Length: 411
Image (cartoon, rainbow, N blue to C red):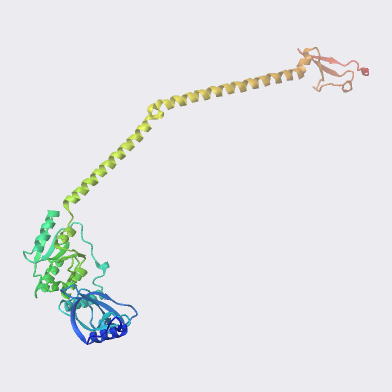
């Protein structure tokens, strides 16, 4: 029943909040359907939060959930549809309305998404999605293998865009069902056949999108393991950007659309021709610059005197040689003149000191008959034979008498 109140007699806030809490909790626990748009796991806490949104109306609420309930629900990817057993309540301290989730179960597509998420985690744990295992696509494949539905839009998109980009491309098409019960078997057989043939350098698996149920074959474990075992690079072109089957994770390259797959497997001939032309122009310009630079260097070398007139160096060296010879001759003449002057002076000194000069003045050199020079009267006796050597001859004489001279003392 409504609470009675007036400005003069207001109700206490705690009473109002308590009454509101009682009225809300009368609804009890209710199963609701909603889409999980956000999961906030709090490390170290036992309570976490989900944000649920109505799948038709713009209505969303935050729901608290325990670790036990969240783990029991299994993988719950964001975007999945779930059925949640929630109980509404009001916190007395803040007066805020909250929802507590007591059970959580995937519903409809959510059940499929949870199952696919569980399979994805198992395959990832085995290492099937390891980036180190991804093979590089060839720059220009000899042949392209295409697995797709017969006369499908995906086939047309891949073939037309491949040939538009590289008209000489060779495409080997393997048709298969791309949805339904036999899709997994036929797509798997086509992939294995192309891989074993050795005829193609890359394999494209293409389909033009679809609902979650339509794309289930491309998340099948048999097909995923077959692609993982391929030695030929595989491109997954399933659906459009929002579609992410497990095949996208195991393939070597994921294309957002079949048209994008064509852009990935072959280069654009027009663009490559433009790149080649730009490269040729740059190479031509580089060669021209190099030739011009080398020509300038050659011209500079040729303009040097030694190359402009090669005989100039010989003439210069000849002049240097002649000058050197002249200086050498002058040096020799001066040395000879100096030696001649010295020799003349020496001869003059010798002649002054020579006995011949003494003889020319009328003196004689006296020797004994055996050739000993007589320098004193004590060296001869009367009757000795002496030789008097004059300037023009010798005189032999006998000593008659020896008489000493008396020397006058110098004053």
